[in-house]
Length: 229
Image 1 (cartoon, rainbow, N blue to C red):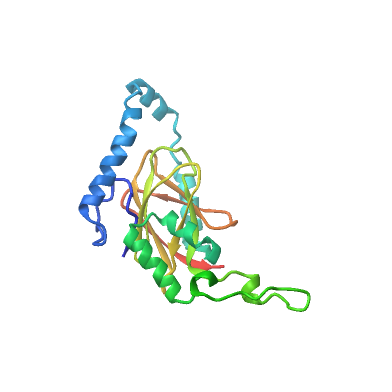
Image 2 (tube, helix red, strand yellow):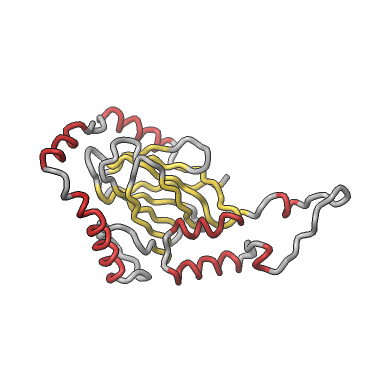
């Protein structure tokens, strides 16, 4: 199982065996230390004032979002290409051993770059047309997804799970782009971990397609079928 090694605290269910409890505790403590010094500079009145300005999502808006999701419970995703392999693996924030295992598995499937397999590409010229392999990098068994908070940036957190990969993702207004593995049964499960205020508001997309919107409660899960472009 592939697990994000530095996910923030808050995950309390079904801890994966490939990640030790010590690692989870260290990650949680590090996040608390990193954020604590800045947080205590705010006065209580500042926090109360900020909460008062947040707009809770209306039942009507939530109903419309849920209707769209129920009619189209899928997400079209863009595949990771060979030149993007290292950036994709880095975005997954895996322990070193899992990084190496994933890289080896991808290369074992024959999707490794030519430089890694020792194959030499023939130069193209007027009398030597560019082959399909040279023209288009091979897609890898990974896909890009982008996650963000489409309302107030209020501390919403979700858990994503697919093909043995689990990661706790804090949501910000600025998009977070990560790679996920594509399994035989390509489904992505999103579970609400922390509701900052008024519902966990998630925008999820891939590539240039408009993102889908979800509103989750803490502990609520939604499953999306992944369709590969």
